[in-house]
Image (tube, rainbow over all chains, first blue to last red):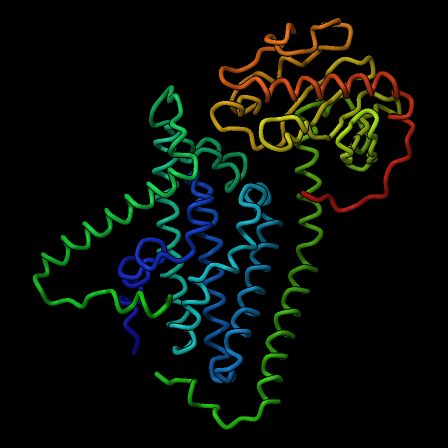
Length: 229
Length: 221
């Protein structure tokens, strides 16, 4: 019997791809200029993780260890291309904004990491749950970082929401700080690094606080980090 | 929890090849299928995206031809020294020429190409100018985007005659167009490209509208 609550807790918090395992940082840092961009890439990555985990789990008994990596690459590349075609067909404007970072999901180590560390050792349902949890964890990081940078850099949230939800999405934009003069540092790449650093620090602080409350009885993380690097 | 690293240890090599081949075939079949079903949708979306962009420089009510397909590309190194490929869309009302939209890049910006759409009415006045994409400095040069400032609207209605003479330059160079604080090179590059395009149009107006259209193609980004 799988402990689905543990899988979810691991993916979202304990082994969060963006904040703990630190995989897939290139797209994470590059597209998080706005919340909507982050959400778009996060959902595309989540979709990819769910289906690549499912496929890897289904073929796990068939593949010899020597050929498992090329097979995973084939599977992940196929899934990403399907996601890319679907986005081109239904979310074309968002696809144009995210551009190269959609095909580059293939190179996100988090996906092959989950295939190797989890999906290849578990049956399809836990594998799908793990894909969903890991994807949502990554998505959460992207959304938080995107929101942080957009808020500080432009003083808005959900700007350009029309890219994802069609023209009516534009009304979703919230101007938190009116007449914001624009703070470039947050929007440019350095802002991404600083923002990610702050998020990691925040997560560690929260994690320590939670751990201290639980008083002593808990396992430590570092082992799980090395496993996937 | 089973571990596959021990399950197939004795299997011969051809079985591995077969398994890998099967994964490849299934993946390819899946892709072909999805591609088959999404291709018409994607083409439709790309067409809509192009028409939406073109609609910003020439109002859709002013023409009734298929703007997306009535286009051709050319290179002309005597006018546009960069040797870039320039695409021209022709807007017509009941086959009468109305305006032409040039899709080209200003190459003398601060950082790489500034991709532009320049709409020119039949009488040689500007119908509209829009920046499609650029890599100018955020916060300084990006006021050329319609989302950030109204600067590109300054071109509307201008022509080679108005402003005449030295007017087609940024203010620092003695012309009519504002530069931005901290960014002169970006607007200067755009003003120059718009002016060159206007001159090209007035010299080649006949060929622009009579040139045979290119075969329809899938638009690239």
